Structures are given as C-alpha cells and as structure tokens.
Amino acid sequence: MSQILVVGSLAYDSIKTPAGSVHRTLGGSANYFSLAASLFAKIRVVGVVGDDYAESDYQLLSSRNVDMTGLEKVPGKTFHWEGSYHEDMNEAVTLRTDLNVFEYFNPRLPNSYRDSEFVFLANISPDLQLKVLEQVENPRFVGMDTMNFWINSKITDLNKVLGKVDLLLINEGEAQMLTGANNAISAAPLICAKGPRYAVIKRGEYGFVLYSKEEGFFMLPAMPIPTVVDPTGAGDTFAGGFFGYLASRNGNINFHELKMACVHGTMMASFTIQDFGVASLQNITKRDLEKRLTEFKRVISL
Amino acid sequence: MSQILVVGSLAYDSIKTPAGSVHRTLGGSANYFSLAASLFAKIRVVGVVGDDYAESDYQLLSSRNVDMTGLEKVPGKTFHWEGSYHEDMNEAVTLRTDLNVFEYFNPRLPNSYRDSEFVFLANISPDLQLKVLEQVENPRFVGMDTMNFWINSKITDLNKVLGKVDLLLINEGEAQMLTGANNAISAAPLICAKGPRYAVIKRGEYGFVLYSKEEGFFMLPAMPIPTVVDPTGAGDTFAGGFFGYLASRNGNINFHELKMACVHGTMMASFTIQDFGVASLQNITKRDLEKRLTEFKRVISL
Image (cartoon, rainbow over all chains, first blue to last red; front, side, top):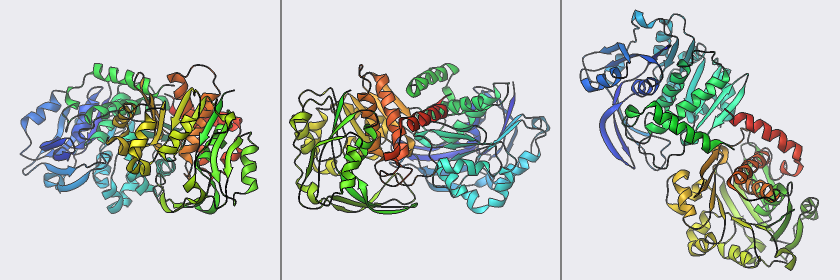
C-alpha cells in the first residue's frame, strides 16, 4: 500500500455554530486529513504541537496506524483557533488565531518519510510547503491547499509551489481570489495555467468541481445533510478522503480515479459536518462509507 | 401533445451586468417560460401587456406556435423592471419596478384554455394564482413559483395555493424564507409538508434539488458556463424546460421523468444566461439542446 505524507496543523479549536459550541476540541488540517485518509492508506504526519497536546490526542492518530515520527513536540502551546458560524454555514468568522508553537514551525522530514509516493501540503505558508517538497525524493502525486492569507501575503512563493504540484485543492472564494475569476468554472482553467495539472474547487454544501486541461470538468453536489452541526475541517477531510482513495488504488492515476477520489472526499466530509470537531470522523467504518456512497449514487443518478 | 397553460408576466427589462447593459429588452416570466417550453410542447399564455408592447414581441411567441388567446392588451404601459447584477451573479439588485398595466391584472381564461393538462403559475400574486387555478377544469400537473414579496405580504393566500399544486419551484433563498430552514436540504421536506408532492429548489450556478416525500432527493449541479452574461429569466427558463419536457412525454409522471425534467430545465437555463434577455433562448434548436445534454452527462458521470 502506498504511503501518504501530510504536512499541516495540529490544533485545538473553539467553535460556535447555531447547533452549539465546543471549547478547545481537537482540530487542525493534519488531524482531519489523517483521520479521513487512514481509512484507506498509511499516513505519515509532519507537524508541530506544544507541551499541552494531550496524550489521548496522540493516541487517536496512532490507533489509526498513523506514523508520527515527523511530529515535533516543542515547549509552548499548541496552535489554537477560535471561530463561529452564523446562518451561512459555508463561511467561518475567525474570532481569534493563536499561532503559538506553529509560528516557528520549520518542517523537517525524518529519513523514513523521504520515499513517500503521495504528498498533501495542507494550508500552511507556501515557503514551508516548498521546504517539505524539497525533502521528498520522487513523489508520484502532490496536492496542495492554500487560503486568502497566503494569496495576499506570499503570492510569489505560492506561485512557486503551484509550479511543482499536480493538484490544487481550494475553496471557491479563494479560487476566485487567486485567479481574479468570478466563478469556479472560469477559475479552474486559470489555476491549471499556473502549473497544476488538476484543480479541485470545494463548494461547501454545493459539492465540488474537478478540472483538468485534457479532460475538462467533472462536478457533483455534496451529499444532502439536513442538519450541519459544524463545518470545520470539511475541506481537509475532503482532501483526506481524496488522497486516501487515490493511494489505495495502486493503478494509474487517471481522470476516472480522480473523479472517484472526489466522491470519496465529499463522502468523508459529509460525516465530519455532522458533529463538532473530529467527533464523527473518528468512528467511521468502511461499511458506513459504503452505505453512504450507495445513497449518494442514488441521489445523483438519472 | 399535451397543452401547457402558463400565467405570468410579459415585461420590458432594463438590465446591467458586469458584461454590459440593455434597455427595455423583452422579458417577463411568461416569455421566458414560453420560449423554453415551446421547444417541446404547445403553450397557452395568460397575461397582460400595455399598448406599447411591440408587434415583433407578439410575433416572437406566435412564431413558436404559442397560443395567445389569453393575452390581454390594455391601455397603458407594459410592466417594466430595472435591475443590476454585480460580482455575485446569483442575485439581482432591483433598482425599479413599474407595475403599470400589471397592477390591475385580473386573469381570465378563454374557454379554449380550460382543458389544459399542465399548468404553471409563474411568480405572480397568490390570489391571482388561485383565480387561474379555479378556471382550469381538471389539470394533470400543476406547478407554481413564488418570491420573497408574496411570502412576506400574502402568506395566507400563498399557503392556500401550496395546498392545491403538485410542485413548488422556488429559489434557494426564498425556500429558506418560506420554511425557516437554513439550507435547501432541510427546506425541501418542509415545503412538501405544506402540500406539494414535489419541491424543486433552484440554486443558480449550483444547480437544483428535487425532492419528493416518497422518493427523497435528486440533485445535480448546473451546466458549467464560464461566462455568464445575464442570469435574468434563468429560473423561468428552467420551469419552461421542465414543463415542456414533462408535457412532451405522454406517459406517467414518475420520479424518473421529474429528474429528466429538471435536467432539461437546467439545460435550457444554461442557454438563457449566455446572452441578455431572451436573445440566446429564441434561437435554440432541439439539436443544440441534445448536444448540450450530451456534454452535461459527461460532466456529471463517474
């Protein structure tokens, strides 16, 4: 089975939504990604936590066979994010960001990680994404995420990373910000003109758009979920389902497999939003996934 | 072939979008609906225009074999709407509404219309929708649209109409306003609890949600269109494609046919938004439609 390397944040989140609130629950892109992807494949994490990081939170990933050799623990506090969602569950309002130990994060890959075949550069500073990429020997498929903050403050580095990856996985609003386009359909080809062979634009409750220069568009809505409890981490869960599926396939990475990867991403994300933080994600079985996939196919089939 | 009765507005629209602007171009729900539906079926229009309504605008519908016996011409000016779209092409900003002759519209059906099998009550006052419905003898399938203005000002009458129709076809924002739900997935069952067997929620560039109590959800994105020139009339065009397809089928009205009706609606709407007003809609052939349908199926197929 192929190995997936992920670099991203491990965090504690304080979240308020119309469904309730949680204080300092486990979060961060690397956690959501790893919990989703480990259902399919072997995961290697690169990241940093503070000395307040709970033993049970280590245990959660190691119980899923996630390799944490590349996880540094340093003196200080773990990254903390506080945010809220109002009527529009598609967009979080950030109330507070405490970078803490994440501010001085300098990702160093253990030697045992260098042969990773799949790499996901979650939403961190583009210069750190580049540093990680330089330490991987010969990856087969590299994907990345980014956000408004890096688009505004580090566009030169960001364009450099875009020139080195196979896939950009990005939110719709940020895809528009990056390209100047006013919708996902016109943004996707402009993303690919910056380097990536593939673009996946995440549309929240409206699903996703997959685009490749050669194959054009593939689009589907998200799984219908009547009550969204907490959308935090849905995008990173999508990425985890996407990469997990892809790494589990062993065969060629063709457009059909990328379509299926998107569908698996959206299925996994549909679990995440049904509870706060990683609560529902940590209990999902392959059987739950298969059941939901069957439902989803019914919902989108003519 | 079955006959479709439509009651709605015939109007002149002045529209500004990022792509340009038009002054007093032909518009109104009944025009968009009829132009789309007449590609599939025979249409009967009920509506009112002023003495400024151009002969060429009559000709446009009659050249499509639309029956205009029920179209009244009265002294005064035709309904006029002025609106603009900014970055978010999903929502129009109304700058001016001149109801003109539409203010005293009292729909009377010619006897020849009373046996109509399919009825579409476009977005007009719910008491007028009721009046139209009372004049149809034994319709097979009735659909309606509505908007925020009637939800706020005439909810009692609106609930009465909802109790008498088979389908509510409504924008996502207005579906939420009508039901108090905060997304389309939770709104749809609440709509059906008000009477209609089916709900279709229009999501603009994100496509549509079809729901029935017995069959559950069916959802797809819209056709990917990189450059949206003018979204005005997209919803009424969707309704026209939907009803036109359904009326052309002759067989049972089952969930599969309703799915296909939604797809035909979204295909027709994808033409409307590519030019101002009814410009692109009036030239579409069945061949154009078939070609786009083939493309669309490729875009949504695993």
